[in-house]
Length: 280
Image (cartoon, rainbow, N blue to C red; front, side):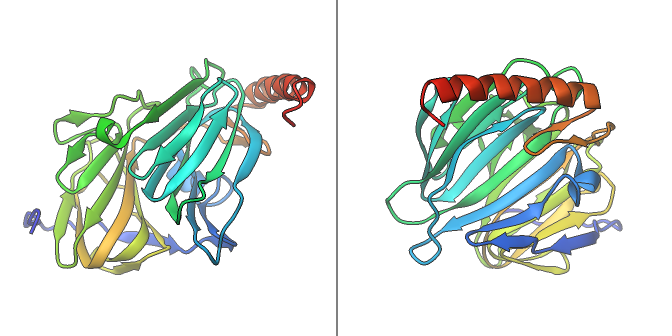
């Protein structure tokens, strides 16, 4: 056993759950117009899995503004590039952090070697950051803190801190449990938003959750107990609520129509440059 749950009267309850909408190898579990309105700042989550039978070529260069994306792999590798000039291959256990802020483009797809399985998360940025500078950070597996069975992708947990400055009070962790193992996650006091999504195996929470599913917990900072019913790989997010409107564009999420207009104007400027360079 990795960690035994502490006895208590309060149990964190699952209030919503879904397998999302699948498009080939991609399952869209959260979107800004759906669960994202409840889970904000977590406004978008894709589970992707590329195999020999469900291969996909990836995504060409495409724009974002007003958000940051975090891409984590449990298996395989993906190519990446962005308009900050970064490019390369993200391996399993690595993290891509792309803070699009005032507008940027990125793209990528699986490498040719085997399968790729992981999650891409979008985080809504607060007003003071949504039109700020673009950040592009790629962490190798050995740069991500390990706390028990959890890898700390964003935020602070168990005495460890991510090297990435998350926008606001946010934790994001990737966890592996063997069948029968248990783990308890105690969020910070202000983290009343909480959810978990599985890419493999099954969990008991105490209700059962299966691979391909996201479960949303009731609004509370109460600890969450996880028990693996079978070998499980999953991500967990918790945060203080994002107390701003979600103003949506095609690839953007902002807090006001004015900031959305500014972000999309910057996106068009970058498009024109990419077209002149023959990259679109």
